[in-house]
Image 1 (spheres, rainbow over the protein chains, first blue to last red):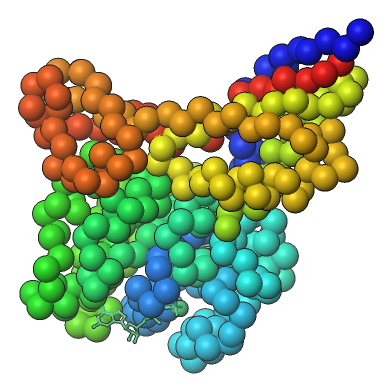
Image 2 (image 1 turned 90 degrees about the vertical axis):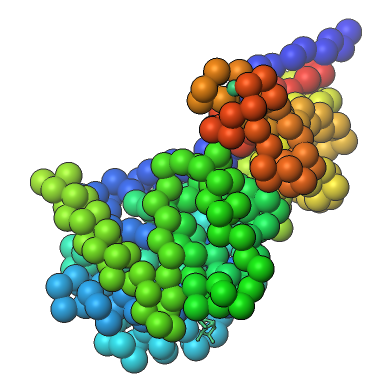
Length: 225
Length: 120
Ligand SMILES: Nc1nc2c(ncn2[C@@H]2O[C@H](COP(=O)(O)OP(=O)(O)OP(=O)(O)O)[C@@H](O)[C@H]2O)c(=O)[nH]1
Ligand SMILES: [Mg+2]
Ligand SMILES: [Zn+2]
């Protein structure tokens, strides 16, 4: 006689990916490499942020960039023009990066040579929020033209990020973007996140971001011992 | 479509559990999904059918228990629940008990395989 049985599992979905992410985080800790997962919509200003950050920090901080955005060399080239190594990930049209996709790119780098590695994730506010890639911090960029309601439509991304950068602040006055409402919702969803208001065009807020980043890198290295 | 990557992972996990019990087939897969997760049932089913072919999970049903978004009030500890729609439509929601706007998310981002029903 066939019988039906209930089996209890209680396992987090994506736990395989999280395990691999933890392994990568462990290696980053050992090498003292601060590892950023940079996420945003297409065109929010990820590459611009990287360029601004490189210009201010590359003298003191050994940086590298992993480009996950759709297989074109355009963004990698902009990074390399700034004198920083960029590794392109073969994404094959994926909608997000996961730990397994990042690993081969990391394998081409000697981690001990880097104080800061940044992954420019695929432009998408939905899927990348789900996947740990072993990052030290998740940084998300929202740009003013996208609208303040993005936090209501894509709440998970805003819930999981450690840092929210509001970019293209130079457009604020000419838009109906409700900065107060965005911050109020953020305070409910994710009160611990650091918020930076920025313009990669005027340079507003970039120094504050770089100062924060330098402190975080120093703290991370101290932890590595 | 992250549901694709997620589904492949789910089928791996449930198949392992079913095999360990010598089950003939999996009848139902029970998931708990927070309303903050972008996890659309139509895609979940689509990818499930595709990836479960030839596995113990082929033909199984999927039961998704959607957990509401829940905010705890910092002032009075009362917890206010809302679905995804209400969350989107009331960005200025306040505590339903004391009216405070000092709310903090305490539930809604779960993503868990609860268990499976198998035929032995
Ligand atoms: N006005 C203004 N324009 C900006 C700012 N930041 C970036 N841009 C412009 O926005 C456009 C997109 O910027 P990118 O840095 O390429 O954005 P991205 O997120 O890397 O874009 P993809 O990789 O293509 O998804 C470019 O034309 C930038 O010059 C800003 O703060 N203000
Ligand atoms: Mg870019
Ligand atoms: Zn209250």
